[in-house]
Length: 252
Ligand code: PEP
Image (cartoon, rainbow, N blue to C red):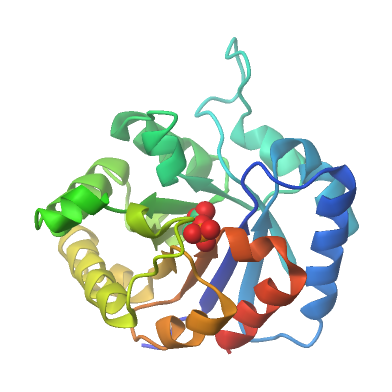
């Protein structure tokens, strides 16, 4: 089945007010002739509104890196899905490994986030991935099964239409160590099979599964060529217009 490709830049806690707008505008400009690939960027919270306004009417989507699963309330320091929508976001990342392992977010909370985001009408990029020690111990598949089963628990096939899975092996994020195209394909095929078991073959065949972990212009094409790789979640290389657009072109 032919699936669309989705390339998303995760800016993490980088950029400032000026550079965020300049970067987003330059990326949007570079997408003028692109009709083939869906593209989004996830700036830090304070720049979301500015960036959304700056790229209005372009083919670039704006997303968030995180949110809290409640409409509003006494949750100091947190941001709701509705607030993100009002700031121009159409989607958000949930469960990035930096939030799982540095901010210690548990699977149960991630499941609540996925559900709350979908209820608010946000697309969700749900990140999963194993640590190096888990891969070396031969536990990659078990880790992924657990993360997916827990994170997507209770969702209907209809709700899953708003979800993209990003496979991001933790050992490849920001390290320069990229999974080989074969390693990525093997895991993506495994994830699709697991989704088919949980939600049915039709859902699994239309689900987008992105790869993330040190994707760069020089390795993107080989990875994106794999039959079960439907795009990339890009960290470091999304902070430079040229390298990010080169990755988008590699997905054509
Ligand atoms: C990420 O932040 O999701 C990521 C994959 O980062 P990098 O591309 O820098 O490894």
